[in-house]
Amino acid sequence: MNDFWSGVGVDLRLEPDSADGRRVGLERALRDAVRDGRLTPGTRLPATRRLATDLGISRGTAKAAYDQLVAEGYLTARQGSGTRVAELPAVDAETPQAHARARAPRHDLRPGGPDVGAFPAAAWLRALRRAIATAPSLAYDYGDPRGRIELRTALSGYLGRARGVLAPPERIVVTSGYVQGLALLTRVLGGAAVAMEDPGLPFHRDVVRHNGGTVLPVPVDTRGVRPEELGEAAAVVVTPAHQYPTGVTLHPERRRALTDWARARGGLIVEDDYDGEFRYDRQPVGAVQGMAPGQVVYLGTASKTLGPALRLGWMVLPPHLVDAVAEAKLHSDHHTETIGQLALAELIDSHAYDRHVRACRLRYRRRRDQLLGRLGARRSVRGVAAGLHALIEVPDEAEVLARAEAEGLALGALGEHWHTPHAGRPQGLVVGYGTPRERAYPEALEALAKVLEPPR
Ligand SMILES: Cc1ncc(COP(=O)(O)O)c(C=O)c1O
Picture 1 (cartoon, rainbow, N blue to C red):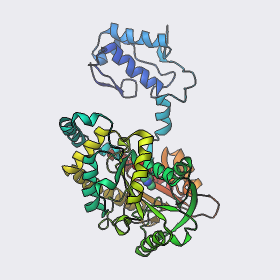
Picture 2: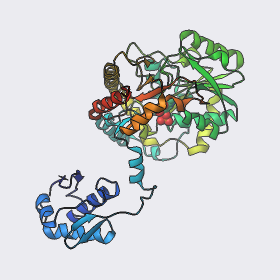
Picture 3: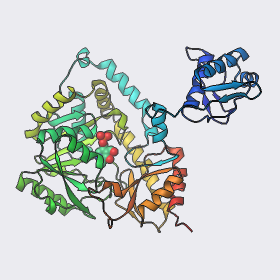
Picture 4: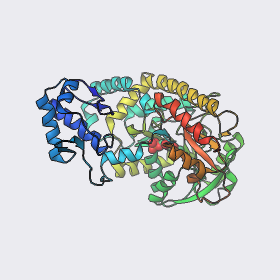
């Protein structure tokens, strides 16, 4: 039996060796294609004789599969008009297929994600194998809420050499991504006023509010966040290496002003170092935490370097916050899942993590160059050569977004990042050039160039 079949104009992946046998494999492939809309209502399916020949299966098996799907209502069979895809009742918006369809544009340049196709699966598998082979049986029990010592030790070395972070293992708490670190910290701060960059990621503002914090906007300009506008904030969340979404780097004078503010006012700097490894025109700028480890909570994540699905992040805390954050973590979920932590520790210790980050840096740098090359000098791309996204200024966001939607191109808009949107704000597109798979990137760029062409 063939593994792929495109006799009905769409690729169907058949699993001939599935334990359930050929009929069930064929049924499943057809059912999935009908459900997720690849086979549209009314499409005529080939006669069982041709299907059987194409697939190298018996005609009886092909007929049994059709009969089953007719009985389930996915297909209709009528004398004279053959077997066709049935009209399904309105799709339940909650099915995974409906979700996937809603989320899957033709071209995806939304910011926020890495190219998950570059996930180092072989290296991860090796690390996982080794982690499991060497883990003591106690590793499968409840553990330290701060996370496994193996990972905290590995991170301590890595963060010191790669990001200039002063990170003794006892001050690290491993979290389920950056977002959990932000949530835990907000809870520990107990309803305090938290200043957040304007523009910034709306989701993170929601996280702070959901955890009892009060969000204050603090403006960002071409030198990054403006410390002189921190007002009564008890803490400020910043993205110094590569501001999200404007792409600027925090100016050295502002870094100093920020740490001066923290020392003078007893304020807390929350450093979101989400893509600090990815700088293309020079060595990455070290973390602010290295200048003021007593005033900064440093947060890092594997979401950009490996993949968001791992849900692995880390906090490096000033001494006075370690116990409170560890306790909040304990009451949240005991601790982050252990085996993934051990695998990441292996990946770092074997230097496979560094090698992967280096390879990704080259890949994303090339993509950014391709983006700039394709758009040419007519378009203003803001921010430094870093990270996985770029801000492109446009005169009318809504107009370009409408053209993008018609083209099946998903993009981010600067507009959604303001604390209080209003007319007169700068307008722009936030383009995630890390997101598409490698082969899909050139087409996505073409689609972008097309929607940015001024309409004639
Ligand atoms: C600004 C910013 N911070 C942090 C993160 C990482 O979040 P997490 O580690 O929860 O996936 C992202 C991911 O998109 C981000 O855009």
